[in-house]
Image 1 (cartoon, helix red, strand yellow):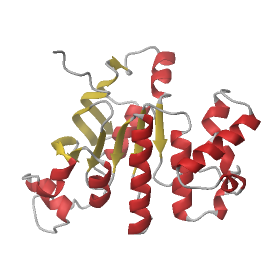
Image 2 (cartoon, rainbow, N blue to C red; image 1 turned 180 degrees about the horizontal axis):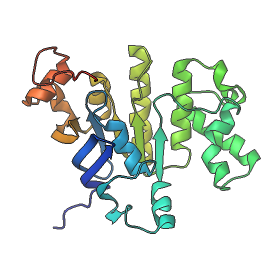
Image 3 (cartoon, rainbow, N blue to C red; image 1 turned 60 degrees about the vertical axis):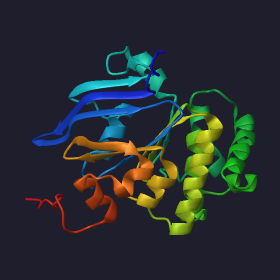
Image 4 (cartoon, rainbow, N blue to C red; image 1 turned 90 degrees about the horizontal axis):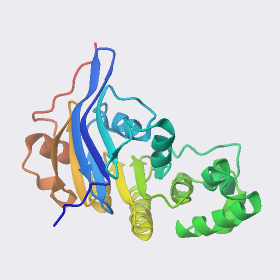
Length: 258
C-alpha cells in the first residue's frame, strides 16, 4: 500500500536576515484534508515559515513541496499557479478600507477575472452567509464592522476561491474568548466543507486544540515536537509543556535584545 503524499512537505528550510537565523532546517509534513497548528514564541519564525510557502519571502535553502511538487524549483508561472490555490486569513484581516465588504470578499475572483462585478456581488453574499453574515453586510465598509465581523469577512475572502489549502495567521488575535471560539468553529466548518488542508499559527492554546488535528512547535528555528493537537497540554516535551502552560520557569528563557 502506497503511503499518502503530504499536501505540504517541507524539508531543510532555512532563512536568515543578516546575522539572525530565523529558520534553521525546518522539516514539516501536513497531510491532505487535515489541519495543522504551528505554535512557538514571538519571533520563533512562524510567520516567516508561512511567507516562505506563500512565496512572499525567498528562503535561503530547503524544499517546499505542494502535492509532491517543489515550488522553489518550478517555473515561476507554475509556482504561482500552485500558490494561487492557497487561501490566506491574515492576522489583522488586511481588508481594503477603500472597498465595500462585498468587493473585499470577491477581490481575488475579480482580480483573476474569473467573474464579472454583478456576479461577484451575488457570490459575495453567498459566501458571507457561510460565515454567518447577512448579504446586506456586503454594502458596508470595513470601518463599520466590529473586530469579530472583520475576521468573518476576512475568512469569507479566504474561502471565496474554494482553495484546497488554507493558512491562518493568529486567527483569534484581538478577539474575546467567545468570539474567538466562534471564529474557530467557522474555520473548522469551512475547511471541512471545502475538503481543504489547513495550517494555522497561533499563540492561543484553546484555539490550537479546537482547530488542529495535528500540531508542531518551532523553537530556535527548528521543529522540536510534533504530534496530535490533543496532546499539546501533555506532550512530555519540556519546552512544549512550558509554552503551552505559560510557565515562567523552564528551558525557554527570554532573550534580551541587544
